[in-house]
Length: 502
Image (spheres, rainbow, N blue to C red):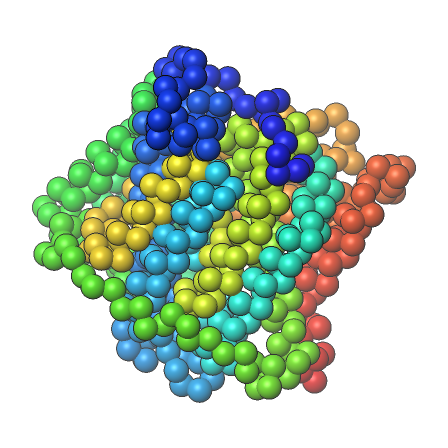
């Protein structure tokens, strides 16, 4: 799809409160035309509400990313090969800064309501697998290289060609799989689904098969409230539900003083306790900006460093592709092939997110699936992103305020949005098993492996193999074969890395 193509076939029908006719001349009209607010059946109110809801459901990243990448002291931080570590406050500041800048940039360029922030898969990979071999600046240098490769693939049109080569059935499956994935994330984050033992997979209801903690009860209450509001089609349903449930959580915490779990108290709040802050304003420390080195290739060798970059590129590339596909379908801006307006620009900016994330030491920034909450609130354009991005920039100075909404409340919104996205399964053709199996694997592998990229890879490989041996090889794009082969390498990268190390 070219940058100038229209998408009238995918424009959602206007809702009853959609403004009729052409907006009056002036700044408001120019903003409307640029972001295509009226054209997409939206309103300024919906975009503002959607942007606010997206921020509320994403704000936890300002707290969580520093806990993954950094720490308050060396003994509880991810220490690199040289003994270096990232201070928690500095990581929080650059996390909010980068999320704000990239969310605004994506909204202004791609004009879509997809929020950006540090990707949880990649930041965990850096903290667990990479910094044991290189320093933190060198790890961020690998992230920058990963982003430059993605920008190159996007700007040359290769990334768009891969996007186009994916069959519509698989694109729908990706949307459904992401819906299950974010619902599963919500259920686990809330404590509704837990591991039965340390190191075990989260497959147990609550604690010992029972919902006993106050935070999990707040999640259940939030889920019911949000579900009723959405079912009754109340305007600003998600925003109203999040605010109302948060206020209840604040009152309950003030009465019962549960406190955060801190990884020790199973009855505590998962990440942050909902308490009113004693201070509101804090000055951000941006010392990590520019702390990048490309010395990893000298430290561990070209082959080993290249394998790390390969893993980053594959994870970044296909996680983003899957998330964008799912969000575009949910927002109603995708056409009959599953593509959306300004696709090339969107893919380039997403690659830039990795470069900027590495340059600020906040880790690769990518599209966040939590943006579906804002879309569920009515956001359809990049104007919602401007609101979300400005709130992230403000969060640099008002970090204490971002800690009021507990993760359990945000988790309830994720489950609701997951249910909305899973409804796309009605467009899957279940009459032919050669497509049913790849679709099923795409959907089920995402939540079970906690990875969008893994689900896409399983679906791609199954699609080319099962469809080919079912007599439909000519219908498969050669590019899909290449990508499927790449995923095979991706899935067996562990033995390859061991062989390279040997």
